[in-house]
Image (cartoon, rainbow, N blue to C red; front, side, top):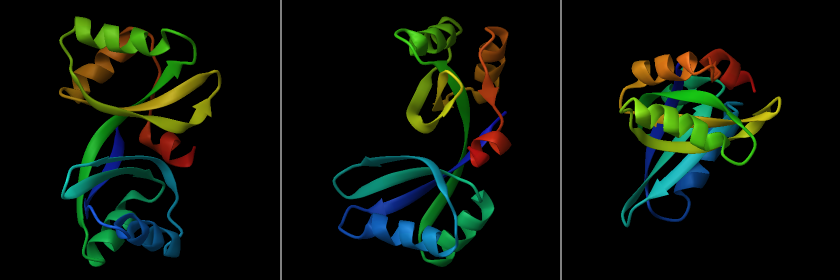
Length: 143
């Protein structure tokens, strides 16, 4: 039920993001979701891609610092309060959301959100106990 995310550390300067997207384009690797956070000197580009290992390898070969993190994709009811159902269930169990970002694809009447938790296994357990749908990586990579 976990999804592999790659994180790329980028210098905060023009063209850094373009280098990453060029490399992925040339290898026919599709970006399924992304988040970019920056500081004064560098940024962290978090990606969900359809070919995780290939993306990691090719980006490392191009000189990028690439990390791997397990995240969780959860269907969120696409209505007011839909996200609250999820974060309330987690906070009541003492699980912290470290970060999250929206997934561009929709799954039925639900949106999909990528979460990073401080206790991923327990978070998945709580979400499933509450009847929420956690998507497996194989499905997310194909959306």
